[in-house]
Amino acid sequence: MSTAISDTRPSDPMPLPEDAELAPLVEQALACARQCGADGAEAGLSVGNGLSVRVRMGEVDTLQQKRDHGFSITAHFGQSVGSAGCNQLQPDAIRAAVEAACAIARSTAPDSCNGLAEPELLARDPVDLNLYHPWAVNPEGAIDLARACEAAGLAHHASIGNSEGATLSTRSSVRCYGNSNGFLATTRGSYHSLVCVMVAADDNGMQRDYWTTVSRDPARLESGESVGAEAGRRAVARLGAAPIDTRTVPVVFAAPIARGLIGSLLGAISGGSLYRKASFLLDQLNQTVCAKHLDILERPHIPGGLGSAAFDGEGVATHDRDLVQAGVLRGYLLGSYSARKLGMRSTGNAGGAHNILVQSQRTLDLPALLARMGNGLLVTELMGQGVNMVTGDYSRGAAGFWVQNGEIGAPVEGVTIAGNLKTMFTQIDAVGDDVDARSNILTGSILIEQMTVAGA
Image 1 (tube, rainbow, N blue to C red):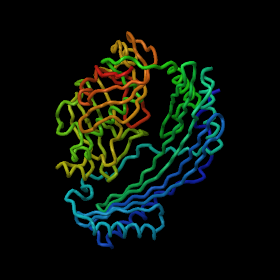
Image 2 (image 1 turned 135 degrees about the vertical axis):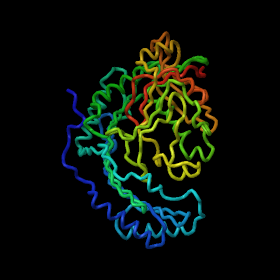
Image 3 (image 1 turned 90 degrees about the vertical axis):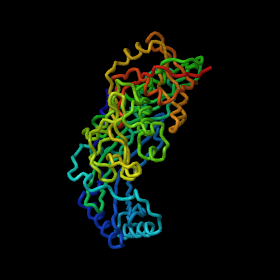
């Protein structure tokens, strides 16, 4: 019988502090910075609890319980800044960190782009996005769930005789951030995951693969048995994998790895890359950068979303934005510093993007997507870091399956796929409806018209 992933919920042995305990510490830190002569300051502190259990071949391999604290302060003296931090929340430790930040700021060169976020951009009434669902599973319960997950993978097929383990992790945290422009807010969040890695073997050798489930709410995780069984299925499917001859063919990026492709685009439109002129999409605002049927949206306020946030790391309010409309780049991802470097305003992305949705007027289910491809490579794993963000040149090791006449066929490994991201994005032919929700980038599988596959 399948065991629900959220069955075990004893009382939390390490409860997080209440909001009312944290806000005064941040306010005191900001006041201390003013006493030290700072023109402005921003401070943040966080407390987190975590549990991680890894089981391999039925035995407990690792068991970790953690509680961490952190404090950081950035002091502004004119256009000079200094930052410091500590891992304690006692008033004396916080004061010492504030004084250190102020001393650093007095010694640093001014930069006209430094400064706090503009007051009118701050989130004055942040909405609750339902991000906090603590899971007070005890170590014994976590071990049982991880064991059940691994056992399901080992039982999936006779060719599976080994495992790299099943790992259950849970974390809850609270963070309070404030600055001297009058912003002060506390947020709570949780993150839970279960991952299983199976190893299958036959006369041709061994293959490994994995599956994972991720959510802010433990009640929404897949069952351990289903995670283990899927990891086993994927490992068995890879048995007999071999290279193919070098050729130029269509390529489908399976949904779990397609988000990495979109991540490269997000990196290219991020402020740091742009003002350093280290982006293949430099000066492309309001230009066509993707296929015309493609939209890429930022939706920060999805309840319970893995990338949801009412404000960014500087307190700037987040908003729904269309980054790409009908293939045209409409917006960058900017924090205050990078925005000033570019002569623009913050877009509420200090710390990164929030819930990126990839949508297409040409959306197909996976069988239809493969049928549209005809003959080509379905990529299910990528290796290496062969992405040049300045030129867009793309070359990575890959594994997956050869698709013949729209049907998944023999497993493939030991090949390299290559192209240029500027061309690849404009050659996105269709997007699958098999959206992978285990990330802040929500996309289905992506079909690229043509890439070079280098093999044997």
